[in-house]
Length: 351
Ligand code: 5AD
Ligand code: SF4
Image (cartoon, rainbow, N blue to C red):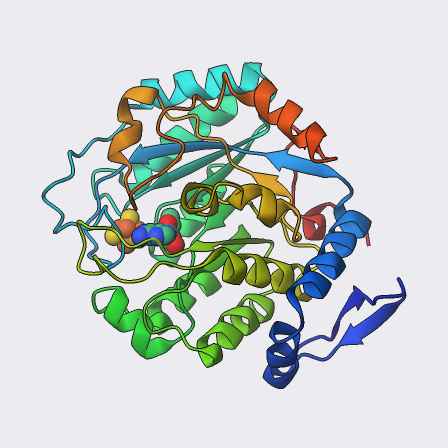
């Protein structure tokens, strides 16, 4: 059976949160303000006011997959494709590290040109560049367990692989035939090979029902994720889901708060999708339990081509130049930019 997790009750005492899906359904049905207030105080209790800042590098927009929602899908001929060189990536890492960034997130499509060998050499080069002090997070899709093992051996610390939706039929349809079972196998492999594990889902995908929302949360909890990335689905005109309704701010905030209560120790980013679709989207997530920001440090010339969805708000902002503005903005919110590695509490705890 699954361990019973604890969270701080309204009166600050710890009480066990039963782990059944009925309990999650009840959690989701609670008034939004109540949920948000509780998630925010639990975040403060467990994580303090620090917000971990990660440098995001979108290193290739080439992808062999055909997820229906995503602008990088192979069948999208309207997108100019690029792949950064090792030198370009290392220059961004050097600049970010000089400004104090302690984590670099390498995100890309499933690009066969980026073989595991090449990725391993890149991870090693980043470790050399940062004197072994920066954490490296990879986010480049499903690979074999052997590939994951080699990446860990080369020094990669964390891996992000969203399951996107916990509904098997919806998953298979939206991901162009790839099964949820295969995705979950990969998550299992990543965990077994020793990665700090991140996953998550999109909020408001076409076909999402209340049962799916409950299942999404339950799966995050059951996977005991170290990191949970969620954001609203944003309909992309260059995909088969053009014209569908996008996710709402309220649903995104509600799911953020519920995740914080279900996974008190998880690192939860306030995501670009939320900031792109809603003017105060990231701020709303930060106020509902989120404790991570991922400014984009990809060289500016490539930004507009990493177009998962339209309206992405990080196309013109230079994440490195921006760090001071981010720190000032967080101060206004009563929070503080934290530039350390920000390892998962499950890794750094001594017990
Ligand atoms: N809207 C919102 N998020 C999207 N992603 C991909 N396409 C979209 C979209 N149209 C998300 C997926 C993926 C992450 C990198 O971006 O959840 O895992
Ligand atoms: Fe490729 Fe990821 Fe986009 Fe799917 S969501 S098409 S795997 S980049």
